[in-house]
Image 1 (cartoon, rainbow over the protein chains, first blue to last red):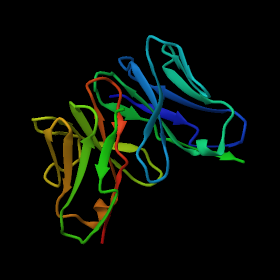
Image 2: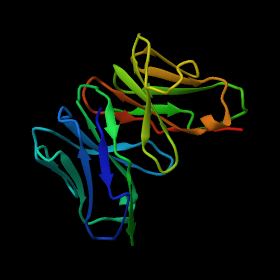
Image 3: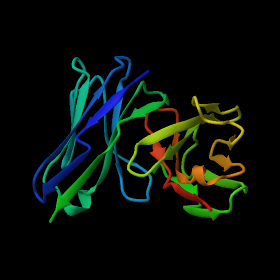
Image 4: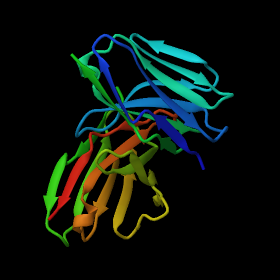
Length: 112
Length: 114
């Protein structure tokens, strides 16, 4: 089955700096890679996603890059703000309502 | 759009009782719903996949008689924790999909069994 590894497990940055979280996956059949933000006591919320036919996607301060050959993808948050502090999860799936495999999560702390 | 409502958000029950958690898709028809369990500072652990009108598919190690899942309509799935014990205390989350790869998550239910 699919295996997703996520690094780092914790990340602390100063407000205004950039944050990068990286994930690797093992199953070459995976073709959909979402990123979720989870605040304490709440469910995960989709913040950005990318499909395997695209190398990069950007939405305001958030971007995701995908290297399908190396089987890794990354989340980039620029101009971080304290409200970006949360746990971020990457995931990989074969799409079409298939099961997703989640990374272990990264706790991001943005210091004001 | 794509809102998933999960209730209750928090429940405390006595050991041996059963607890039902509801997951509703409010503005779309959910062909598939997933139920997860999450321990503090850990990732989401998939418990089962639920398709409307059919029996749920449970992940290895998940007791189907203890965690009863019903997906009676395209907008509602329920998880019943039967004869709950303290070790069942956890954060339970549902997600739903319209048939595409996008998942929409409920807000989670914190279950505490005394």
